[in-house]
Image 1 (cartoon, rainbow, N blue to C red):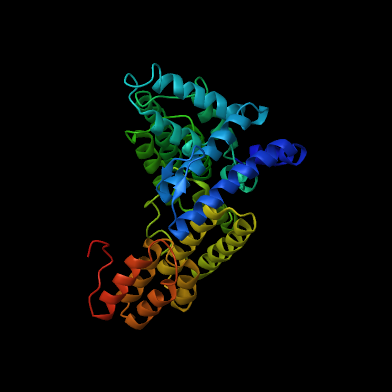
Image 2: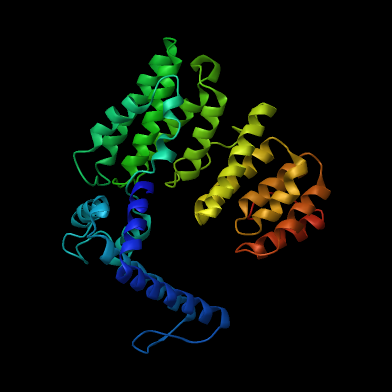
Length: 374
């Protein structure tokens, strides 16, 4: 949402009334969090007694409601308004009990999960340096999906068939020796799919499965046959992985960093480290954590053991999978002392502190499995 957020920030600088109102509502969230930390009794604005955790939920919902009401009428938020309204007409035609979705579920989706507006750098950042530009392909593929503001679950099957035809076209191009064209087609296709996900219901996963096939084909194209520079391909891929937040690439890059050359791995590590610092400076916590997780994958699969302990300390216990990944890689190479140091460095603070502490104790007792259930 880069372009839209930039316009909105400028507007906030000119509108003291809107800025003040949002700050007041944000203050109620801080107050609710303080009550939660103290274990005190929370109260609604009407004086009703609330569970402290529910008090935080109410405060966040109030801010979200005010924000949505105030900004949805602004011109830069017109893409959001059109998509949300079309989806509301599709899924909430008469309200409960006629609607297939409860109002609370739809509201949560509209407030927190509905993506709109492009982030040009993440989706198209390096295209001008590709041997063949993906832009014309992205434009052609995207033209199929602009006839409606929102596509229902039923329509998703037809959308996936359209996407599959382009994957087949890329495979044909590669077989005929046109690898650069195949690469450009699939890279433009990847962006078109992400943009489509912003206004399509893929509850059945058909679009996601199509993406998996195309993304896998993209990664398998030999770089030396396309002529693309490594300092273009890898930063473009990593930025895409950081900002793709529909889960389309989850578990689809396991093992892909293992085959990198040392120079390619250094390039990826350096790029991710730079991105982490930039994202933290911009207070983009979610994306900075995504970049940190990716860094952990590269370091683990490349077996850069000298980085494990410091990286685990930076990760903390905010997520458990990436710590288990580092520890498991160390154990597979019979480096139990290093695995123990990974846990000791990570078990400082975070949502998964108790779980990681239990895994650490089991490891000290000689029992190890990366399976979270064991």
